[in-house]
Structure formats: C-alpha cells, structure tokens
Image (cartoon, rainbow, N blue to C red):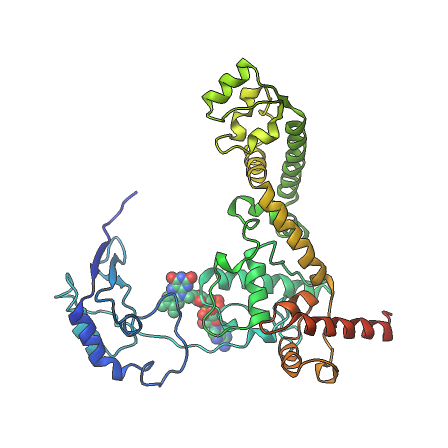
Length: 392
Ligand SMILES: Cc1cc2nc3c(=O)[nH]c(=O)nc-3n(C[C@H](O)[C@H](O)[C@H](O)COP(=O)(O)OP(=O)(O)OC[C@H]3O[C@@H](n4cnc5c(N)ncnc54)[C@H](O)[C@@H]3O)c2cc1C
C-alpha cells in the first residue's frame, strides 16, 4: 500500500505567548460563547490556559492526501482570530514559512436535554418524534451512529405497534450510552468510555456477535443463517464444556511430558481437562494433545470457551450482579405517574423523578442523588397504583 510520511512537531513558549496575547479575542474566553468545549479534544488555547505548566504541546502534521500539498496540523484546533493564528503557527518548528489556506474555526451547537427521552429515544413531549446523535448532547461518530440505529429501529417498531427495543447496560455499550444519557443527562459533550460500563467484562469485542446476533435476527436486521450459526456455536460450546468436565487426565508420565512441553505446571491427582484449560498457558487449540478431537469445533467455539473458562469466577460474579439489576429493570413505572402527588418522598427526589420520568425502578435507582429509600417509596406507589387500576 502507498504511504506518505506524517510528521510530528511541538509548540513552544513563543507559541504560548502569541496565544495568550490573543486570548482576549477568543469568543470562548470573552464569554461570547458560554458552551463547554469537548473535554477530550481541547483547542490549543484551552490547552495553554488549562495546563499552564506545560511548555510544549505535540502537533501531528498530517498530509491531506496523496495528491495534495495541504497539511492538517492536528492538535492545534482553535477559535482564535486569523491574525493570531498566523502569528502562532509561524512559531512552530517546521511551520515558519507555512501558509494558512483554511483557517481554524470553532463550532457551537445546541442540544436538547436527553432526560426528555425515553430509553428507546422517543421524546417524552412529542409522541413519534425520536432524537439521536449530537442533538442529545453527545460528541463522536460512534455515539451518533449507535443512537441513530436504535432510534431508527424504534421508530419502525412504533409504526408496527410493537414493544420498544432497549439494549441493557449488561448487553452492549449502546445500552450504557443511552441509559447514561436518559438517566443522568449531560453536563458537557458526552463521550462513551469503557470505564462507564460496570459490566465491561462481558462487553467484549470477541463476543459481540454472541451477545447481539439474536436481537439482530428478531429485529429482521440479519439473515436466519447467521443467527443459526451463532445458536449452533453456543450449543457446541456447552457440549465441549461438558466433555471437558468429564474428561479427566491422570498424573502419569505421558501426560506429564505433554504438560511440561506446554509449560502447564504439574498435576498431583486426576484433574478434569476443563480445570487444565483455566491454566495461563493452556489454550483450547492444545486440547488435541490430550486426545480430544477438536476438529469438529469452529475456532470461535474454542476461543469463546477458553475465554469463559479462564475468567469463569469473575464472569459468574458479574452475572449474579446483573440478575439483581435485571429484577429492578423489570419493575416498570407507568409513564403517566404524577410525581407531584406522591406523598412521603423527599422534594429533591420528586423533582428528579419528575425530570427524568424513569421507565423502570432500575433506572430510577441510577439517577444521581437518588437514595434507596426514595426508590422504595416510589415502588410502593407504583404497586399501589397497579392494585387500584388493574390491567384491562
Ligand atoms: C471539526 C470536527 C471534528 C470532529 N472530529 C471527530 C473525530 O475525530 N471523531 C469523532 O468520533 N467525532 C468527531 N467529531 C464529532 C462528530 O463529527 C459529531 O459528533 C457527529 O458527526 C454528530 O453526528 P450527528 O448525526 O448527530 O450530527 P451531524 O453529523 O451534524 O448530522 C446532522 C445532519 O442534519 C442536517 N440538518 C440540520 N438541520 C436540518 C434540517 N432542518 N433539515 C434537514 N437536515 C438538517 C445537517 O446538515 C447534518 O447533515 C468532530 C466534529 C467536528 C465539528
């Protein structure tokens, strides 16, 4: 593949001085713009202002294309006026004679409070209107496309008169993203991080199809053969797991030799192969060394079983927690509940419930600043309402 070089240079004290001199003309610093910039890609003036002890910042010089002599200086995005840009660009080594063809600029955008959305991304105020992407206060391509997909799916389900589709926090990062948005709202442009997911041990790239393929099929997004392949792999995993549980190896010379060769340590008593698979150096691909016929298993089956076996303890603990959370997420709260009329509840809790209008008790409990006692009071009210208005 053809490649062209990308360079690195750095800003210096003269760059910082030029920027500081122009700060009084930055719309962000003069207060003309009151929005909060994205935390994870700050402008150069932001970096100079927020990290005054740093005397230099890295700049990637990226060619715009094979046929172009334009260079994109990544790392110095800015909203400063053009004459300030001209001055500081020329202080950067390598850019002394650079010509600015497209000046840097900033964009400001409005967003709508995502707490005004149901977890299926329909607005609470206008039925049938769905919001997705930056309008919900997020920043990022993946964040926007993930919401777009969920909003699209739910718009279609709504037209068909079917139940909304919501991915749980334990099922997918999309579930974490949307639950964070609709439950907590946003204080600054929101980006999704793996650290926001409490069940991230399960939300792995290697098992994405195992987690989500059946949903995809139910929603009509993927063909039946794909779903059937996954169902088959899951079945094979259980068969192989059981086989490994039953297959016991004994401490005899031939076994010791193989274990030595694979650097698997010792065994002092008969041991199921499943336990051997837990060992750090043991791979499912080596099972054939212990007279197992693994040729009929797809590599994905071997891979998944190996991962699940090695992390079994942690995965089980996480699944237990998820079961608890799920119970709370099954307890639905009617959308028309009038929080103002609920007695015995703290005012702060009433206000927060009223703003978020949680769809489930689980979501209610995740609202920042809500106490377990508030959730109990709410649940008692919901049950009371259900008794007074039995389902038709
Ligand atoms: C300079 C810059 C660099 C960025 N770099 C990155 C990056 O490296 N990585 C990353 O993940 N994210 C990046 N982002 C953020 C990312 O681009 C956005 O968060 C994301 O594209 C938002 O997608 P969206 O679909 O919500 O909105 P948009 O992409 O803004 O789409 C909204 C669309 O609606 C159209 N529209 C508006 N009003 C109307 C109307 N009345 N009728 C019909 N159509 C209308 C607009 O023309 C637009 O096409 C960057 C953003 C900027 C500005």
